[in-house]
Image (cartoon, rainbow, N blue to C red):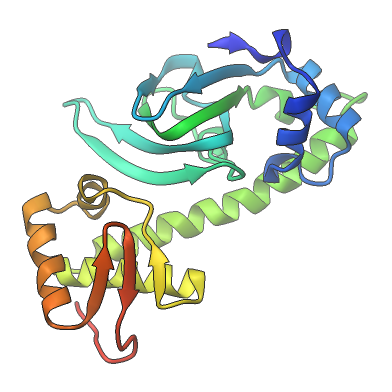
Length: 235
């Protein structure tokens, strides 16, 4: 981890201005908050991983370029994919709103990415010189938190399905509705998709093949098409 303030510049201001966490803030307000919060900075190249624990595990994480996958790692070393985060999404509200000091989080870059880690105390402990800025960011965090809870609910809904077909079809319908199109990209490799749905990869591949053969879905790599979207339901 590096101190972001050591090489913070105007190009970073432009990137941060596009993020939900800093929506509605002026360039000067963003600069003032960075000076106040002294965030840590990390770069990850595509495919590389890092585990976040101890003092960093409760921080507000922000992916402000590229993308990464977020995993929870249990005491046995088993990983559970929590979500895929792209540039512009605030990843850290999950860490900031709950105590994750005893959890181990692993980040794996889906593409080259840059991340910030901001101590929540810089938001939750009022500073009269920054009160307006803190209030704006907290409002943005609440908006991001709403999306986080929606993501969790969608994940649990997929996992609650009894069959692998049910899990797959529920996820496909979620993305179809989200993109308002029967054709869309799933942001997971096959291994990551199996992890996300908590199923065996071979069983997942077999199920996808059956769904394609039965003319329910079509796919090429990560691009999926839902055929006859109102015709099928699976438990």
